[in-house]
Length: 163
Image (tube, rainbow, N blue to C red; front, side, top):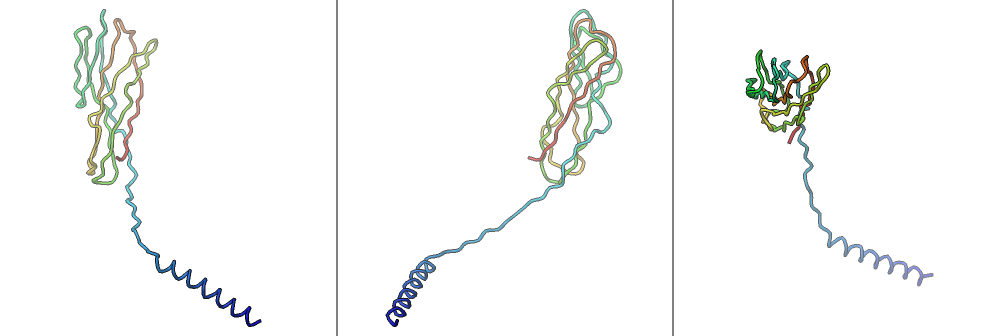
């Protein structure tokens, strides 16, 4: 039995020395874990809609362009009157962060018997938030020759997201 005990002790010493050799070659490093929390970004209408005003269509097609400030210009083939406005939006989020602004490319305005299409143009494509953040959306409305009369309405979406 003594041979058995000697063999067991020798095996234990051998296993301990092998394990010790691996531990001597080990290395350890550390790193930090980080997170940057941003306030939820929101966008809301300021109550002003994109309004192309009152338009008298003619024998030729034409366009009405409303810029980001709300001023309109009409092609020679149509007559424009009334007040015009660009759509306005307010943005809130974490001050100092940058957000991207995007809109639908076009909006379809539907009337009693017909439709018209307008391309959309935001006043900004990115904003660095500072607490007084807003943008507008203007557009160019295509009016067909002898466009059917009536009130035309359509809606479009804007999206604001952190970069």
